[in-house]
Length: 224
Image: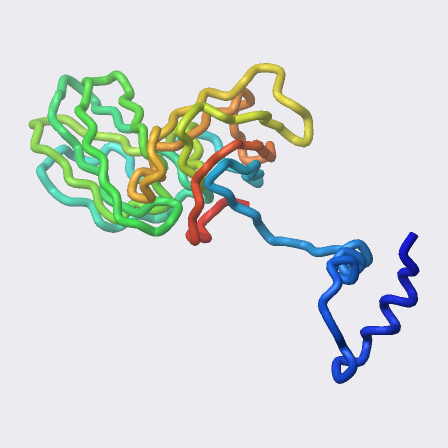
């Protein structure tokens, strides 16, 4: 067996160092713990994402009973504490389009057009980190509520519904979450990757998931 101390002492002085011995490199890495903030691979890697105390879905989070007067809303009293989808509902018969503009988890500009369905709530599919404006149609004697849904935005694109585990308050969820995916690694589609946890958010529950992904990115946007 090779004498480790002998090798370490013999080549500690750079002025006297001879050939490079692979064993020295091996000893170096065995003796040290190397921590990586994140490791990504195009062949696939496991990533953890968490949400701390996300608020319950709120049908009037952005606006309540605003007239469908063809205006553009650009001032909102609050933004969601985590990227999530939008929901809209009219006070009466209406089928016109409403356009939501904002940003996604990576601070990219996104938009989504939803068609009203009268008094039936319409749920969006994209996760908005912020809402910057909402373009309303004109429908006489009708108002609209605009709020948040229960779909949380993922910080990585998924090619498959590869959510491996979901936890609520530290306990594994018995029922798997509902996952929507972009089926693409394009950064522009990140807002299409969402999850609905089995336990509903209520401002108290904490959530975490583990996903398998091949999305290699320098984007830093995530949740906490």
